Image (tube, rainbow, N blue to C red; front, side):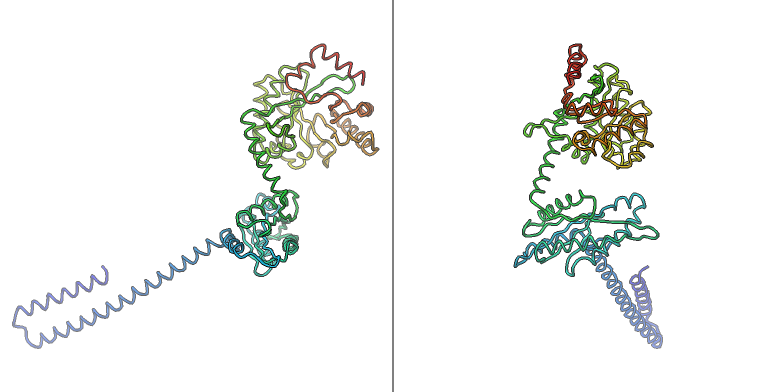
Length: 512
């Protein structure tokens, strides 16, 4: 029962009592006086109770108002502040950038828009967990705060992305100094408990009003510069340049065109034949994608393959390539080997073995006729993934070849721990083996190394008869290059196995 209800009940009771005595008419004067005193006392109690109740309600409303004000203040802080580091967030940075662009600097000064992305932070999260990652981010925020000038705005956009707004810089040189201080601040390893973490940063810089006059454009151009800085895979800074913008736009257009080309079937498969260097006979074909653009003509594979890997299209492209190559290989003699590249992103595909086996089964090509080629650089980048994926393919009967051999590092380690069937000497050594003693010595050493491990040895990029003669002399077994043939269509490959074509190949081999 509330206080007001209780007071009203008491008042009603006394009013009823007074009314009874008044109606009886025989109440003594002394008793009437007592009743009046009781009523006065009751009125005082009621007034005091009402006063206490009013004060209590006032205090409750004041506390509630205080809580609401605190909650609104906290909401405003959260709306403009990063919860982990306490730095301003993206919204506050955007507001500050708008204000800076609305008041452009004078006298040749510029405002600097810096976007930062940490190097090596993802590995910390993956290996040690997000709690350690958060500790690292807090330390990074503190170091960045000490590296920027007083009055500069440092913000965290999320994850390992930070931004700096440096107002009224005396030209790009001053912006460089800010970036270099940031890089220097992150050079010392960050300690979390007993762990030491090395963190670097890629920094993209746009200066306004030189590069942009609106916030969106300034941030976009700083992001373009950041993309270039991150390509170096170490701490680096890059200013936005118009050439960067053109390249980024071209890359974006290539991505769009690549998706359309794959959907419409405009990417075909071509085959580079491999030959026995002594007999001149075809021993296999290496399949590769060919993209002929309607406007730009042939797009080199080294240009669109990296884009396909970045966008995840490489899995669809590789499956399409293998399916078409197996369809062609089904028409070749059973001893002819089909070689297909394994792209770095595919090393993370745990279903690759099942997919490859399914395509082989559907096409009727024996697993022993398929040779998967992986570059040494891809092998080094993900050795654990390579061992898992390549091991599964070998179990299925597929052959494994190490491509671009000699261009990576720790080759002996790889040859010992990865079960290989073939090594392919990189064409950069073949091109110069007849002109430089060093290249000739390297080729000879690589061939001897492959022989020692009992591997088939092949060479890429054979363009002259002198190169072929030297390779045969040093013990190289197989090779491919323009001396023998350019890439062929699937239909053209079958011509090698007709009797007239074989005679031409033998004649060509003898004449060379």
